[in-house]
Image 1 (spheres, rainbow, N blue to C red):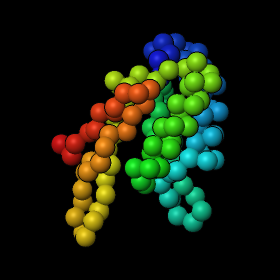
Image 2: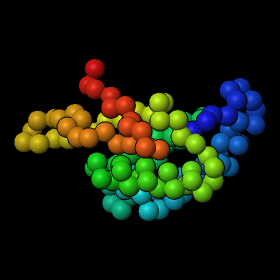
Image 3: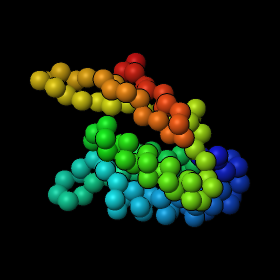
Image 4: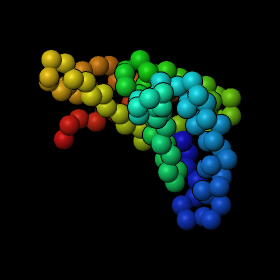
Length: 116
């Protein structure tokens, strides 16, 4: 998203006001990572950064779709060049990283971060 001014005392409040609806929506209908019981975490937000979490490629694609719809409705924008992702899977005891197509947002592929 196009960030708020760094160091401006109003920035945290504006960020929270702008993103609270999408965070609430993602937590309600998004596909997050289980925490135990019926709880899951789908988003983490700090300063002017937003992290989306999911336990599957399809779940992350759904979360990104929710974010894109929110941006379309509100006029907010995501800066795809500042977005990064990775998919960690375990198959037969072996951990695999990014054995998938990259996700996209606003029609642009998200940079997939390697294990290094």
